Image 1 (cartoon, one colour):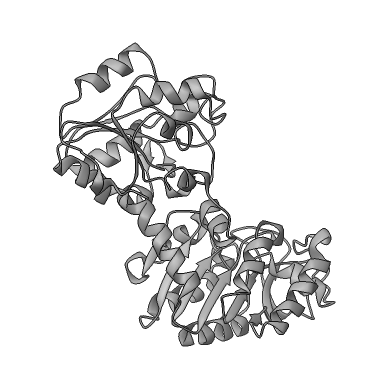
Image 2 (cartoon, helix red, strand yellow):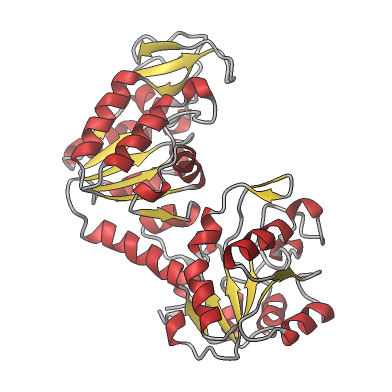
Length: 391
């Protein structure tokens, strides 16, 4: 891939695709991790006197025009505060006024297009829409790793019409994951959590070929436990994937990968901030309760193994960490990952990043991947459309 530092920038209008799909509450950005991650590319463009046109999506609007709930105005305000320069948002995604705003932009200035998904043609990778976006600029830069697994107009289509380059974040994401999966320091331990096994079957299959150990938490662990014959009460289980989980357990053994599953869990009758909880071993889960966090014995075993690792990949929380009764498993694992300063530690996925941020450990991990689905697909060995068109 050509990097942005190979582009002829002075005076050029640069269409910079980013992923600023960040949480906004009451008109205020509450987690600016993704915004900060792109600052090196934006500052490089500004320092080299480019005229920067930022394009992003936010949320899931209907694609039929402006929706106040999904406007990028709060995000532009947050970026303006970080850059300490004004960042204006266009009234429309495209149109005569948007074209005029882009034309009037001066070197060293930043303009943000309104939410790309206000126009349904963005997700359809519509050629006319891609051409219209490209007509706003002279150069295209993709720094939206988290959206690069989508074949959308601003990710794929626009590259047909403009000289195209990778931003610093996109390159670092790819380089970090490639190095981790091809030449990791060992032991290499992967930690997977979240709700569904079905979301991560291909990742698990791929990781068996590169990791020394695989730690399973979150609701997905109960499908594995069901495959071992345990009765898991009202816990979330995917019946269609129980057989696969049994095969995965056998595959781990055949490949000499240490597969760690919970030995105890925190259960409750409901998911609530005020739930009465029970700590029990996995062979003693009551029929009227569900597992909502890993237990203390499991947490200790997981943390001990994480402490031995020299490469750690973490995607997915250990339980319903947003609620106090079920936060301890995720908190302990996050602490172990953060405190292992001898290891290269990589975290990815929105919930995992939010958890690490909640506990104040952002600066203690080696790399925070902005990708969720993109990270998983790259780990699965898939070609990401947004990366393929830059190669």
